[in-house]
Length: 290
Image (cartoon, rainbow, N blue to C red; front, side):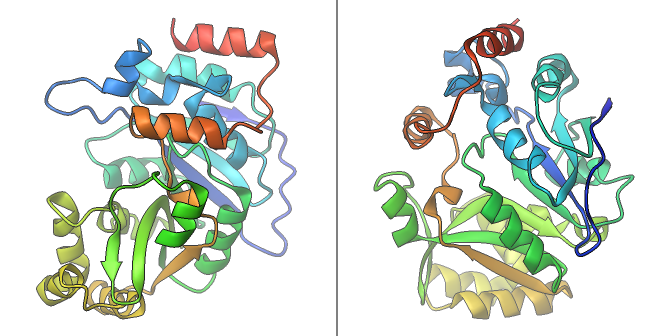
């Protein structure tokens, strides 16, 4: 499904971006997302937050950004109709498409990028605090590298909210949190999104770091002996790509809606965001839960 919007993108100075939003439920063995279940939903992206469905926040930020010429939402087909309802209410430009989520993140992003030759940004539907400034920073970095990923320093995250996160990546030059925002200069580099996604050093995250940095790099990170610049250089060499990290000054960029606790935190941080009109809110949420 593709929706054309007013094509008034000015790409004379910079290449336009496609932003891919990962909205699949990603259910575990139990088949339940506790946060979504609390709101009577199967998909977390459809729960109400600050007067609109959760996914509407990231979509509106992206749709209004002058560099974003195309939006693609990866989600299970059963959620197409309620998300399409949200999309039709967005201001913005370019094109918008719904793409059926695949078996893993890289496959989903690859499908979402099939007809796109330019740079890509990837984020998640629960990144309600995504800012235009973050998109700017990632877009600028992509002009000089193949793959980029966003981080925020611990002090920046704690300045936004002291108890927002409970785990960080401990490096020799500080503690960092990953932001669910990744960039690729083209679809040729989509496999890298699997490597850089994940904030905790354990389980699948350790496997990703091992793939990017090798055993020595993984051990250095676990022992707090690696610097950020050293890790990035090591990843670039091992993967054969120009990898760069973007450090976000705004700590909110590392805070997603993952559970009841972070839902409440993000809701409070969104307190000054203008909601939809009462009529829009009723219609959007009613259709999202139908």
